Length: 110
Image 1 (spheres, rainbow, N blue to C red):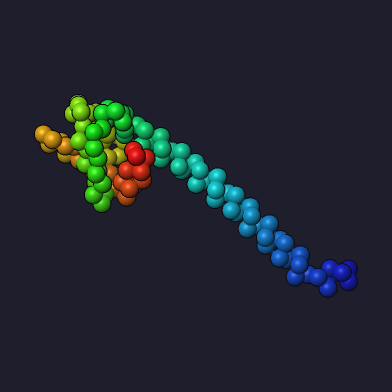
Image 2 (tube, helix red, strand yellow; image 1 turned 90 degrees about the horizontal axis):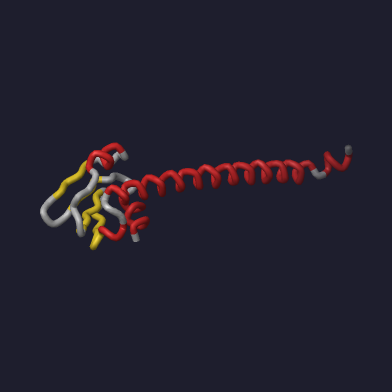
């Protein structure tokens, strides 16, 4: 008992360290699940655009991505279901209003 009273701060420190380690592991597991669902979403969006082979060039502009495509036959209905905020199709480009994940999607394409 005297040992515990003498070194109580070591035991408390170890307990705090263990709790922090458990919280960190939980955070990493949740973050990994979010990345997986985000990558699945990006893969579906990419398929709606005709795949990577269909993209000639793309450019990110804040929350939007502009695409120059080989074939402009895209699945607009599915893109809207996937949460794309806006789709603008011009004669020479397609613009998708993606939102806050536009930069992540641009990295995913690259």
